[in-house]
Length: 173
Image (cartoon, rainbow, N blue to C red; front, side, top):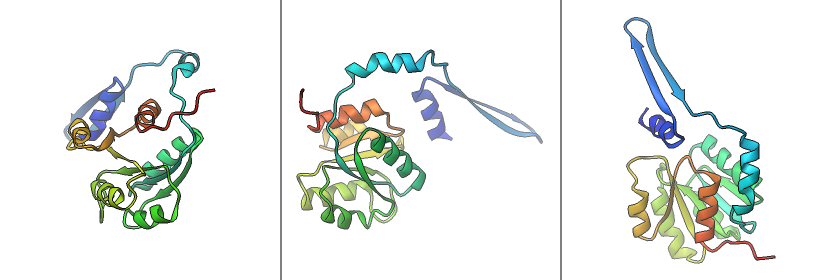
């Protein structure tokens, strides 16, 4: 429930919880209305960073979260291979020619931090971006230690900024 409340807050909304003895609990998420979203996104599109198409390995033990990430990245023109088993990710990275690895932080068997450490030893040229939905992970502290991290749910604009910081800008022209 804490994570749901954080997601609501992140999008400018709120969580209303009402309980009645013997009747149960009602949880309502309330978000502000977005006016003319299509027009708004058209206006912002020219300012959006242009990223070259990438080949990305995405690792998340939650199939739904992985599917959303893969679809988002694919719709932005990237070639994405998804992996739900973090223990298979090192072999997949070794076999593929990836520009970037995006991984969840908390996974059974091998954490995103352990994957980062493994990948930086075996494939130091391939940057790793770690995503976390947990309030326990301080993304600013992680960045100070050389980790590239973003908080879930991640927004396209945040991904684009991270990709720019990692040097994946499209060639001008």
